[in-house]
Length: 214
Image (cartoon, rainbow, N blue to C red; front, side, top):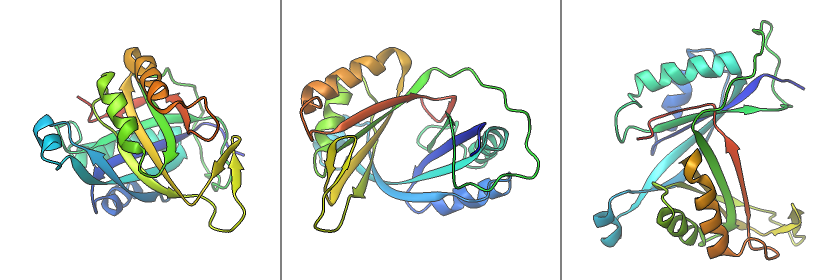
């Protein structure tokens, strides 16, 4: 069980996820996972034309904090994430990690102060992500990323957090400023009735650092 680990995430254009992992490997990252997802355009005109869905790759990497921080900076520079519409990266601290090979040499871990942003995760039935994003946008969100996920595939329905996980779910990831996170979560809860059984799950977490958010 390791401590002093970070979850490093990148949201980039479709088919760029593997390139991100290759770039991160040059900074000491041992590997990562690429998820295929959909982003939402911020342009109201595109939304009206039905062209607001944009394919995205979500890259998730678990690494020691110092390595994750270096990789984030290096990839952000190579991918020009400090320019608009090039992509987004975020980093958040993990309490405990299992299943990751311990590095032979690790730096002393010091807890960082969290940044000005939070990540909002919402798990809902397939097809309900539009309602989540619409409610979030009305509360000040600038968009989000949707990952289509699978629950249990057999006859038996699994229960996670007392919620039945059926074959198809949408996972919505929204990055928001601290001061508007509560308003966004309240708007989503009001729209989706998340306190009702099997309506969905929402949780938030602080981010240590972000790049590419304007």
